[in-house]
Every structure is written in C-alpha cells, then in structure tokens.
Length: 345
Image (cartoon, rainbow, N blue to C red; front, side, top):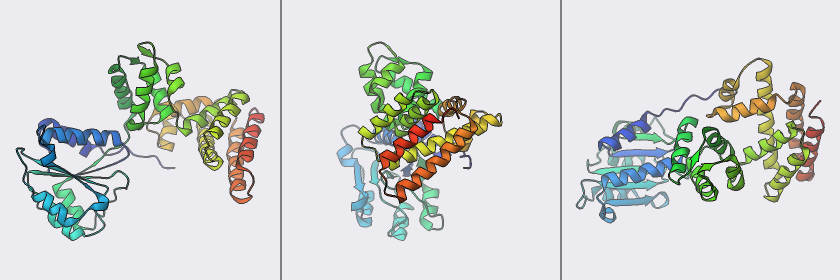
C-alpha cells in the first residue's frame, strides 16, 4: 500500500481568507468527506453575502434531481433585492454530465453579484480536465475539498467544543475519542454533545467517553484483538457477542478483523525491522499517530509467527464464509477461539 500524500489545502485556505477579507468569488465547487466543515462554511458565506431578513429573496437552492439549465440561467439573472449579492446553491448535480456546453456558457459569464456554489454530498466530484467546462471552472471558480482534518487540528477543535459546554478534556483523551469514534467532525459533534451532557465533573474522563460514546467498528474490533493480546478471552468473546447483538453481518465483522490483523502483522514487521509508528502511518495512510502507536503497543504482545498465521487463517475463513454456506457466526467464533488459544504460540 503506497503512502498517501498530504491533501492540497490551498483552495480551502483561500476560502477562509476570502471570507475574512470579504472578497468571496462568483463560483465554487464544494466536495469532500467532511460535511460538518462544508456546511459550516456554507453558513458563513450566507451570513457574509446576504443581509439578515433578505435571504428569502436572495438565497436560492436547486436540488440536483430537479436541475434545469434554463432555470439556473433565470436564477442567475435575478438581481439581488436590498443586497449586494445573491447566493445560489446547487446540491448533488454532476457538472460533467448533461449539457456541458450550455453550462459552460453560463459559468463563464456569471455576473459579479452572483455567488454560485455546487455542493457534492451524496455523489462524488469527478472533474474531466479534457472539457472546456473544467477550464472555465479553473479560471473563474474555486474547487474546495473539505478533507478529514489532521489530528492536531481535531484535538484543538474537540477541546473548544467541550469548553463551550463548560468542560475540559486532556489531549490524550481527545485522541482516544478520535480513535474510538472516527475523525469526521460531523460524527464527533454528536458524540461530544452526549459526553458533555453525561459528564458530571468539569474534566471529561475516559470513563465518561466509554460510558456513552458510540464506537466505530474498527475500534471495537481493536478492543477484541487487544483483549486477545492480554490473554482475556472472556472479554474478547464479550465484544464479539456485542457485535452480534448489534446485528452486524459476520462477513462485515470478518472484513474488519482481517484489516486489523493485517495492520497488526505490519506493525510486528515494523518492530522486527526497528521501524516506528511513523512508518506504520505512512504505510496505511493514517492521518493520526494515536492508532499507529496503539497498534505498535499491541504488536509487541504477539509473535511474528502468530501474526502471519492469523492473517492466513482470516483469509481461509473468509473463503469458507463465501463458498461453503457454513454458518458465518460459527466460523467467526471458531476463528476467535483459535486465535486466543494460539496467541502465545
């Protein structure tokens, strides 16, 4: 797996600067995984461009399924009412399908009073550099990717959100929250709300997080392999039982376990070759050091031979699940028992 380079944040940084200086442009394309940031900046643009109380006249939303080129042209031509600008948001319309020539004609002559934003949420943004439309977007507009945030930025943001609820959280506990629930802000915001409401003291503890946070599947599977490494088969079996109770399909659980075991194997190999967590981050494209460090700690409790056999057996069970018609839960439970029994081998 090749290392993933850092995402280009130039357009994102320029958007922030344009908002600050009041120099927002006429054309934007918003896309990327981080919906929380995307919606936040859409709201900031709306506040900056439109006077309070005049949104009904100057703010227009077009859904992709209802998109019509003539309707867009008419909306673009609508002069602002008691406002210097109008704002048009088009949700989930694929720019590079349909009448590209007609759309190109509209976009290259957008009036200065218009701010047109194409938002990609349910569909993926894919540009076609061979088209005139792509050239016009590059010349006249800005394509802003809202990417997952770096660990340091997320930790600071989590701390600010808890302070707004009259709580504090330590750096390591904030990292643990990211590890447990994922690094998407729109997911974390709801978890922070639950934890802040639950915590009885100003300082949020790991116990508060564990009490009410909803962990992502990868984090739960890590808890299972961690219990195996500690020789606690009862806990490992309990975690698997909880996943069954949540009605997660065995094949999905096996896929998550397989990924975890492959990461564990590469961590063990990294230790054998005296490489650190940074190597693991680059290998797996991890944006945060915390999961890599935890994986390295866990790998120290397993032998290289165990890790290799675990990956092989996981693949064999996957094949059996897909080809033999055997009960998935029985196969997965049997694999867990085998891993626990042979952990020290």
